[in-house]
Image (cartoon, rainbow, N blue to C red; front, side, top):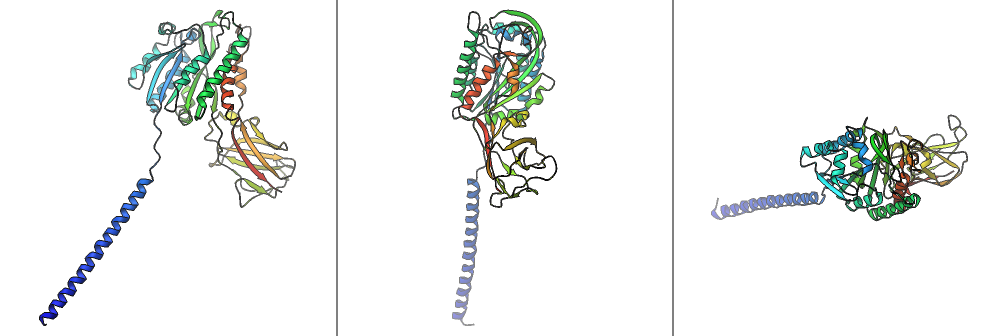
Amino acid sequence: MRLGTKILLKVTLLIIFLLIVFSSCSGGRKDRNMDVLSTKANEEQIPAVDRKKPDINVYIENSGSMDGYVTGVTDFEAAIYNYLSDIKIAGIGNSLNLNYINSKVIPQGNAMENNLVLQDFISKLEPTTFRQKGGNRGVSDLSEVLRNILENTDSDNVSVFISDCIFSPGKNVNADNYLQNQQIGIKVNMAEKIAGEDIGIVIYQMESVFDGKYFNKSDRPVKIKEKRPYYIWLIGNRSDINVLLESPGEKSFDNRGLKNKLVMLNGSSVPEYAVSPSGSTYKKDKKNPKTSIYGITKQNKGPYAGRFMCRVGIDLKDFPLDESYLLNAGNYELNDPDYKIEVTKSSDGRYTHTLILSSDIIKPTELSIRLKRNIPQWIYDTNDDIGEDLVADNAMDKTYGFKYLIQGIEDAFRNYSDEYFKIKISIKN
């Protein structure tokens, strides 16, 4: 082979080699660039950050009316000890700050920092300790106490308030005027707190032996040793309240005197819901299958014979109201008086409850269903309007002025919304 031909061949081979290398490098760069873009995209999809654990601030009222709950070893002490221990064990809070409260807050330490703090706190729940901790123990100004607690409650903490919740007008005071003014003050303080905040309140009604002096509305004492109601409040951000309702929840109070529960939530929202699969008496609208039906007819047999009936599945897991409240048809309102509503637990895993809608009249309608804000009956059953003699007034299981306290809070919530939710169902011929 001639020299010129050899050189030309080598140059050609060199060019081909370089082209392959550059092509490979270019392809490599392209792959790396794709990896970078892919990584960047993943970085932009930042997962939701878990909510910071709240500080949990506990306030036990140590006014004179509370002495009887801490005389000896009582269900009061056992319930509180178990509940706070369960909160600590579950690691729900960033801190567990223990306080007494009457006319002022009296700090007692952080139970998260030392295991002995909580044990010591509970073991010293005695009338002598209550007196030693000071403050104005003679008058229970609940409006002022709640104002103090609310001022120290925000999106970063939850307040646990423990009290008999008895109003103490004192001597030579018009009790009716006092209660009405307390209700207004509580409403104003609560309205300021829930303005623009997603606040939730839970009130557990508890029961324990009370061995001590009970003071009536005129501060006249009488010695009793009977079971009496007291209350454990949770006040805080709705998401934090939901956590506490799930764990430790009510199981902490098993066999420790739990009687009733009240849940109050701020605002109104729309739950997930859908009309159940069509049956022989109606068909689902293909355009809006969850909320619209047509071709309605009356049923020929069964419990709804001669009436039109449809079922609506609804998910109320984000509405942690008492189950008795959710199942009470009287708490729901329909805009069409020709329709009736029933509420049952759902066997469908997608929904927690079922709304059963029925009517004697076949007609098209845009049906609106809302869950109203109502004060449950147990609040009125618990209320003592007289405040004089527990035995003569058959009021041993009642709390003087309790309805005024709850009405004040509920009035504040209703100022923003008088319903928990509203849904709509379109019914066509």
